[in-house]
Length: 467
Ligand code: FES
Ligand SMILES: [Fe+2]
Image (cartoon, rainbow, N blue to C red; front, side):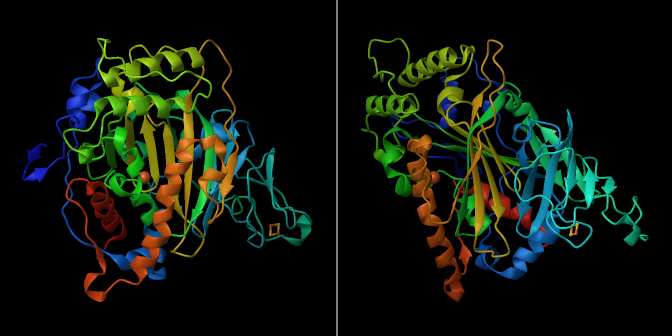
């Protein structure tokens, strides 16, 4: 346990050190980002529950959040060719992002200027954007191209009938939009991310699996379930044998413009909840098994007591060799932490890029339609681009799961599908419980350390909404 300012920063056991101590013991030199500590501890305050279900709060979010901030829309590889486009829909706001030239992206309101039809209803492609109703048509730069029966629209001039455009910017292959015409540059919202990801470049990765699920919970309930490892002890209790849940490190970087947070959950050690006599060998053996699940047919190693490497060092070294051989890339300098641990960043309001190969995911959270009790969660599994001059693999097609379809209906996800189903099982219960809370207890009570990222999220949300 490390205490600063009377805040206890994580709980260790005799066999399960804090994340920072494991990083100090890494077999490789560790980039400064993994040792960096946050600069913000949010003020502790109860979170009122009505913000999770009222139409009034959702309407405020639409006007002051979604129309005003930089937000993660999609990846460049989702629209690989000029003319490719994708909708980005937030509640009842909708935009579409288009690759308008080889290295140029644009985004527009997804509404026809004739009678309002949504222009882009799914992924599409073509040299122009054409409305399916009466065929009004725009060029990829948003300029008006054609109106059938042009003689009947004498009052329509081309300059007033460009498609209304919103800001677009990219980082690491991710495409962000901001509908606010006075938006600051994206860099202001990215904060530490470009610096912290520079040795694990997100642009050198591709989407190997992509699923999006409808969830019966407010988008913030869904997001918050993924910002802490505090729930592992109950929700994922079968992972305790190899997961340092209570030894997780949490950090927040907030400079007044960028709001970034991170968790580092070490793997290959037992949970501190299992006590001082838990088995480090079992933790290592289980970590080998779990990582081997993604490689059917590959023999699963076991902890080698004669090795000069630590248990975590052994798993990391095996991962370096397996991934290196599979991808024709050199992972020899990568730290153990980057090969094993769950290192998840969050950029306000809807974007979680993960760092390293431990759990290489990307999350996106969005309100779904006009019902504040429902949301979308999108999950990508990413992989490094293969080396040796191999071409960039195509982005995996998007799979959609409805409210009651479990992740385990998609066997491609392996063990992850079971973990996500465990997470999802809580969310409708949370949403139902929140709506029926006692008047005297209609707020969320957060842990000082382990749930600080949720506290900080609401601190920033309050600021953005002016509440
Ligand atoms: S509504 Fe789009 S062309 Fe008529
Ligand atoms: Fe979880």
